Image (cartoon, rainbow, N blue to C red; front, top):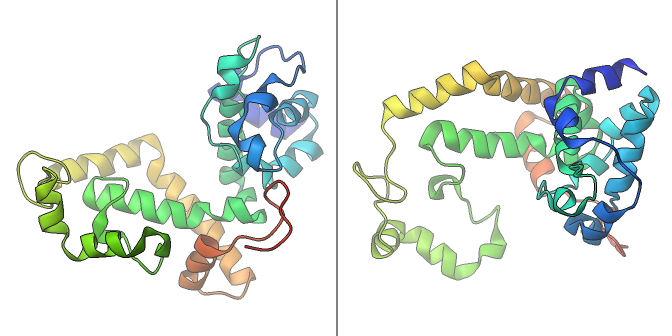
Length: 236
């Protein structure tokens, strides 16, 4: 048993998610991610159960652990109630803690995701917020949504929202005292430390790649190489 496996074993999600695998492959057969990505949940479990540090380190640095959608379809069908999704969470947690996530393209996407989602939560109280949605980042949204962004107060009012205004209602303005409580929750539970860890390793990777932090943020958000998807040949 290696040190990486020992560290991984401290995560309750590994304890809850990995019981007695019989290597039947049901998790792979039911997995939505395995249908589209070059991803095999059964092999994840095999690797972790071997407890070999070199194999686990390779897994922590790989693209593979970032393909899972954490939908838990694996647990619903597994005859032994294993949850590969929870094992994946433990692997992602350790990969982030050690900075190994910057070794993979999909792992490096933690940087823009952390800035977007956590930034929205701490500033507005919402995971996704129209104030930070930029059409140049999401051209797939199309001209109709662009029009809605230009008339968002009226659009959300027509839909029953209370956009950025005090009082009840969808997309209402969140009181500063509540935002302060959210920040306190981040501080106490380790969320702030996790964000700082992602930033530290990501900014070091940006320097290694000869990019500014802003260039790296944009690059990791937009870039997708070939080789992630089944039957994929050309770079996206």
